[in-house]
Image (cartoon, rainbow, N blue to C red; front, side, top):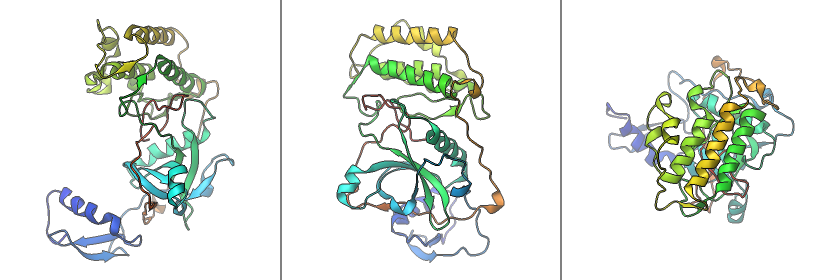
Length: 342
C-alpha cells in the first residue's frame, strides 16, 4: 500500500474487496492509501516469496482405484468455510444442483499436514454407513500438483445448525458404533467428536493427542446436544473433565431440543458404552486395529516449493446457499451428525 499500517487487517479488508475480480494470472497487487488498485503484478519483483508445498500426483502412494480430477473441471457453488468449498463437476445450472461435492484444499503450509493426513485416511477407508465417502483427488494443470481432494456432498445440515429435528437415540448408538469402528477396527482416533466438527488422527502417532480421547468427546457431544451447554469444553483439553459432566445430578434438556426418548435413556446408553470402553480392550497404537490404516508421511523438499498461482474453481451461474454439512461422520439415515470442515 502507499501508506504503512501497523495493522495488517487494513490491507486484508481492501484485498477482500478485490480478490474475486482479479485475473488468475495476478500474483500481487499494489493499493493506494484509499484501497484502490494502483498496480497488478503477474510476476514477482525482487525476491520471490516462499511457495506452498504440493505433492506431485505421480509421487502419491495411493490405490489405483482412486480417481483424480483436474481443478479446472470444478465449478464453485458456495464457499463453506476457509479452505472448504461446495463445488460441482458441471457448469450448467442443472448440473450444479445435482452433481455437488465438497472440495477441501490448502494454500498455506501450516495446513499442509492436516490436509495430507485427512486426504490419505479418507481415500483408504472402506465404505461405511456412517462415514462420508471420499470422491476424488484434485490436481492442478499443467503441473500435476495435488492441491486437495473432494468428498461426497450430503445435504441436511448439522446438528448444531439444524435444531428443528429430533436427535434420535438410534443416532447416539450409531455415533458410539462408528467411534468403536474407527478406534478398534481402523486404528483411528477421531480426536474432536462434537456437534460442530470432526477430524481424524492415528492412535499413537506423533500427532495423536491423548487429551482428545474419543470417549471423552462422545460424553461432551451428547451433553451439548441435549443441554446446549458448551461451557465444559471452553477450557484447554488438558483441563476438560468428562466425569464432572457425566456425574451431574441432572442434564437439563434445552427447551428447543427435541428427543425421541427421555434424557435418562440417552444417559443409560452412554453410560453402558463408556463402561464397556473403560473395562474392555484398550489400544495404544494404530497397528492394534483389526484393519489398521496406514499411509506415508509427506516427503517434503522445501527447496522445491513453488509459488503456484491459486485460482478457485470457477463460480457457477447458479451459485446457491446450501447448508454446510458433515465432513466425516454421518448417520446411516442420511442426516448428518456433525460438520467440519477437515
